[in-house]
Every structure is written in C-alpha cells, then in structure tokens.
View 1: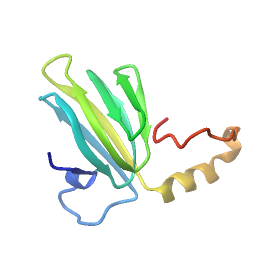
View 2: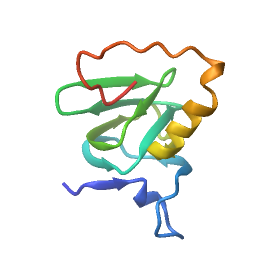
View 3: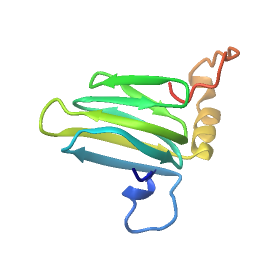
Length: 123
C-alpha cells in the first residue's frame, strides 16, 4: 500500500508547502488503514461518516459531531461512509503558524500546562 503524503497530494499548482492551507475534501469510497505521512499539523472537521486514526501505540475514533487535531508525522487512516459520500474540511498548518497563533492569543485563554504522561499525536 503506498504512503499518501498529506497535504502535498492536495496541492496542484505550487510545489512549495504553504504555512496555512484549507482543503474541502469529498470521498466516495471507504478506506481501511491507509498509510499517511502528514507534512504539517492537520485539523480535520468530519461532516458525515466516521474516521479512525491509528498511531504507533494508540488509536482514536471520530464521528460527525467531533473534529480532530493531529500533529505532523506518520499514521493510518480508516474512513467509513454513512451514506454515499463523506465530506471533510481539512485545515493544515505549520508549527510556525501554531506557535504564532498561541503567542498572539495567549491573553485570550489560560493555558494550563500539565506534564504529559506520554507524547500524544492528537487532541
């Protein structure tokens, strides 16, 4: 099974990877454990269907009432269809954009820092 380089597979005009990129994605075929390499962080808003994301030691399931924030790296995606089509809105952003956002809006929210038991690749 080939590895999908995401979001590079969605970029058609420009070869360089932008710091911020939005893609409205429609799929018509269910997939099971597709290999993916995320070149940047991804926020996925699932509109219908279900998605399972598998990492090295943990997996998470997401339905249409949820969204998922995934940091860059390798993972497996399973996408299950409820109807004939599933719609996703994907927001891709670099670490630079994430750090800028957190610094700019630090006053708007209180950031509670707790020591993590393990490095989790999703929120």
